[in-house]
Length: 325
Image (cartoon, rainbow, N blue to C red; front, side, top):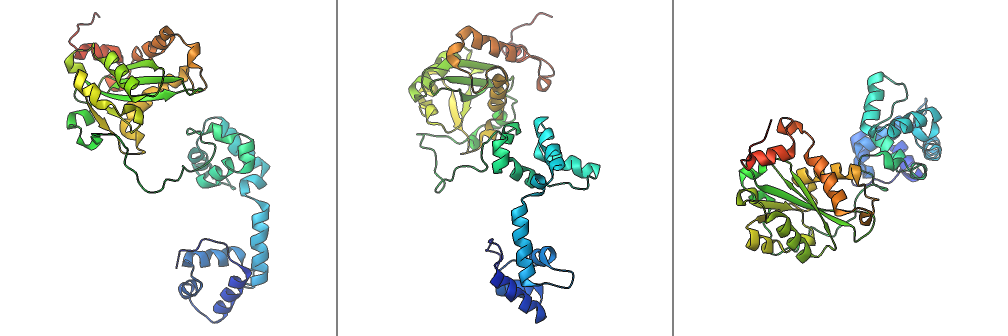
């Protein structure tokens, strides 16, 4: 019971009607039909007539409902209300919640709005572009089983010292790659966890050797206390992490698969960079000085989490560099 999710057939509706006339309970009817009892309650609530449940009319009601489409698609006023607020940057949850708060007669659920966004009409209208996570379709690609990343000597993020996790120690970094409209447009980004100082460097490819060499080049000039550990995702471009450890002494830790939120600092930094360099950017149109300017603006902007210091001020303070008032 409770494992079937297909629609009722006319034959099932006839059996349901017969068992109702026999006086069986909803639970017993669900057991005999192999359905969840909630399904039985919904069927009777939605498709019964004023004088009782009739299989033929219930079947016609169900088909008519399917042909009419969703409530949002049937109501021009409701559809415009939802789509206007999506265009204003509201999330489906905010739209549905506000409608409920205002006591709108024809309110809809968050899930109904998502279904409308990803319906054929919603895709033609490009509604998905208004969502914070701009996916053209719902869901994610299916994977056969859980595969561990093929990175030699991989150390889990759960083995990081407590000071790294709590951002109380200086010198711990996060690394990531940003991709743009062309496959060869790649930007290596690094962020120090406690001060949020961000660095970026252009890459010519995603080869692990080039990524490791670039990390070494960017961070090797820093004092030892400013380069202790670095945290990556499970991309193959970070497979040469042992080379980084051997040359500049930085131990690498790796997030759990499909868990970018465990490296939230660099994800946030990448999002800020994309304000000036969106994904459709052609990186060849940017000189290295242009990239440096974007990063400098990021590092010279006061941050609430730093007591409204800038990342560069916090970084220099941790290095013991006196700052002029």
